[in-house]
Image (cartoon, rainbow, N blue to C red; front, top):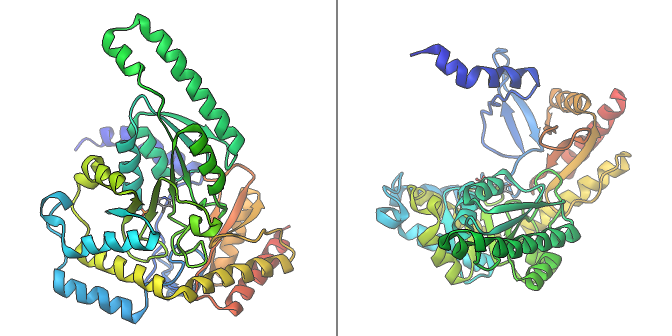
Length: 420
Ligand SMILES: *Cc1c(COP(=O)(O)O)cnc(C)c1O
């Protein structure tokens, strides 16, 4: 193997990542995901440290419930370890069908389709719905999987300012003007180009439901209004909303008491504590995706036991609304505790609580000191968030106790003040 060629593809990127402190490494956790985990100390020879985890996406902490673990184990015994094929060949087993019914019911939609991950759901859905002549209107803080889906679709992308409805309306107006002038320019082009360009305006608004770094919500009622007025489609990604937002964890429509978006994406890997992504909506949308979404078609179906686990866990959420309430109560308590400690924290409408520190190095230092004290809250820095907006990003679980949350709030405040 020619090392120089490998170097030419990789070396500079690695060196510049190291130089800019953005080189990524894995954390080694030697216990299951729960409110406390044991973290191995890299090469130190020390015993793993017991750590209070305020960093998990497993918001409802469903990963360790005996009844749910046993259901998944039973599904392995019944259905084996793998699915053996793509959904459209031999992979589709009873648990896959049941899961899709289960999602449709949970979300109150006509139908649902599952993908192997939420990432694949976004990439497959946007690239199936939109093509070269279409427009996608995308919130500037959308998740990477949405951005990749837009790129793959080759649609024109108009990014609007975060949660700024007036800016979204401006972007749509701009796109409509571009389409009109495209129609006029087409006279000089070949007949084929002219036909393509003469296609009427089609647009898709796409947004995270809960923004992953700020924990704030998309304004679904206003987005629905704009979509209706402007005749565009609306897609929301409820990855961090499913099982978290709304009185019983059904998501944004339940929270606002409004209609659903045309296309609702979600993941089964966060609060649902399994794996997989989904789209829920009208039957015709689901039929379309089953036929056109490449990340659905050209991949092996998830293991049937994973589908069974996702379905059981979702049913568990449906029959245990108190678990969702427990999470929401914890978020309220933690935000109030931080405020009592003198930190400028807003009440969060999700399970994500950002504590903005500002300076990049300072955020890192606070996070490292917290970890020495047995509390894991990651620091999020540029380029994930804007420069000078570095923060601790706490995410809560239904099973954190108030004592644990109070201890964390006190420690955060003490450390931030000691660094000033
Ligand atoms: C996590 C996440 C995804 C990806 O879901 P996975 O199932 O983990 O692939 C998509 N969108 C948003 C907003 C997310 O936070």
